[in-house]
Amino acid sequence: MKIAVLGTGGGARAHIAKLAELGHEVHVGTRDPEATLARTEPDMMGTPPFKEFLAEHPGIELHSFGDAAAASDGLVINGIDGHNAVAALSAIADQLAGKTLVDYAVPFIYQHTPEHPWPTPWGIMPKLDPCDSDSLGEQIQRALPETKVVKSFVTQEQSTVVDPTSVGGGDHTMFVAGEDAAAKQQATDLLKSYGWTDILDLGPIVCARGMEMYAHMHSAIGFGLGQQFGGHFGIKVVR
Image (tube, rainbow, N blue to C red; front, top):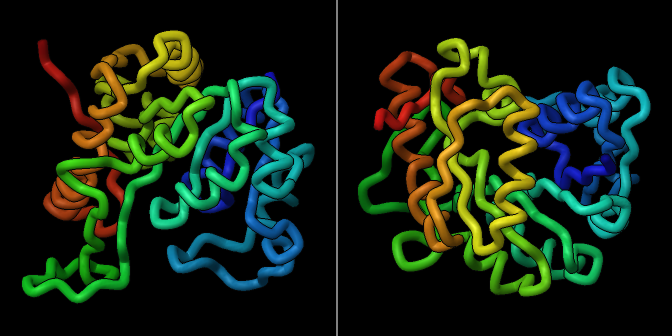
């Protein structure tokens, strides 16, 4: 299958590598391919330059966001940072029309000055915007009415999403939400190919609010476990 991954950060790279390992033809999208390949320094999260990743994963193709989405034969994974996702995706609405877009972005605002800051190992905890009365997943679906948006992957580090058995032998829960049943099944099938066995359909895209707001709890659990960056753990819904 031809699958597009939009973004070149650490999370996107986890999906790119796993999809290639599973035999898919992977098309990676970035804002400016030339600029991405010209970078020689790690990004803000310490991720090495993307050209080093490409050298280690031959056969991966780098495109603009639009060209990567167009190359997909039906499934696109959104790894664009939450603050810029709606604008970037709206600009390629035609290339995304009719396709399933699995979105795992969190609507973090990093540059803010809260009255009561939450200190973290990397600075002040970013705030969520939107929150409570809207979600990034919903905003993307409204911006892309011809695209079938599924919110998923967002309650775990992406390294765990693509390798669930690395935590507790895989005995934990992943979630999906969206308006289109077939699109949610497509996301579920991908998760199963990654190794997930417990996948809970939360319902319509409005449930993206809960998944996105969980991001702060995910960080808190990681801190409690002594994991300063990310979090190597899972959550399990016990029925």
